[in-house]
Image (spheres, rainbow, N blue to C red):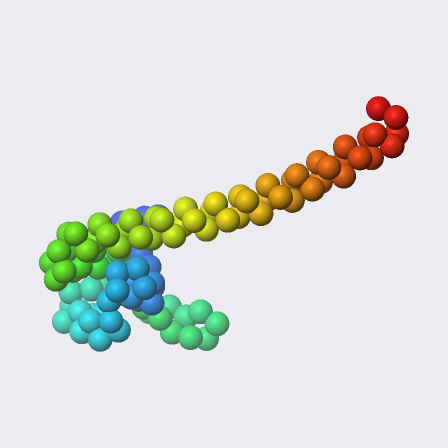
Length: 112
């Protein structure tokens, strides 16, 4: 069952599992120690962290807290992503508008 490890968005760090689903570090370690979560240990900038299978964490959240919490947390994450993207687009729009005005002014000086 290696496909979960290689699938896009099939894994995430234990820190992201905590943020995304409101889990505690103790819950994650408990489930790792009990064999409920498969994990792989990785390092980032010399700091260790665990990679977890998203499907196992989601199944745990449904079992422990109910499907409503899973759906709510997924919707919150999607909303956060959308808001972030909108902020980036607004900033890019301002940059493009300013450049458009510069170019328009330069063209007017040249007599067009």
